[in-house]
Length: 95
Image 1 (cartoon, one colour):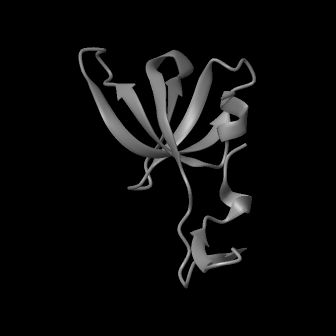
Image 2 (cartoon, rainbow, N blue to C red; image 1 turned 180 degrees about the vertical axis):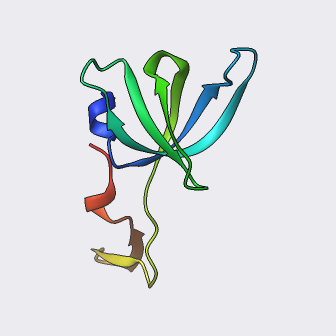
Image 3 (cartoon, one colour; image 1 turned 135 degrees about the horizontal axis):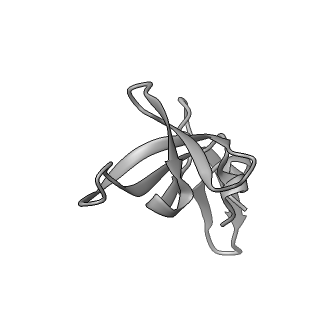
């Protein structure tokens, strides 16, 4: 996945600490990409914003926003049975 497609999305990433000795899993939001494409501005869940080289982070998974309320149902018609299967919100899925 291209880094430009992640701007504005939440994700789990692994990132190196400031000294390059350890990696950790962090939930972040991609805020901005530098014009060079080498740096990305991240925001953590505590509100701290910081720049990191793209080479020092690794994407694990893009997180889909959860919304309050019941999940939408998709009805599948079967001649013998009818099932109601919860469906994820299609507008939030990453292409």
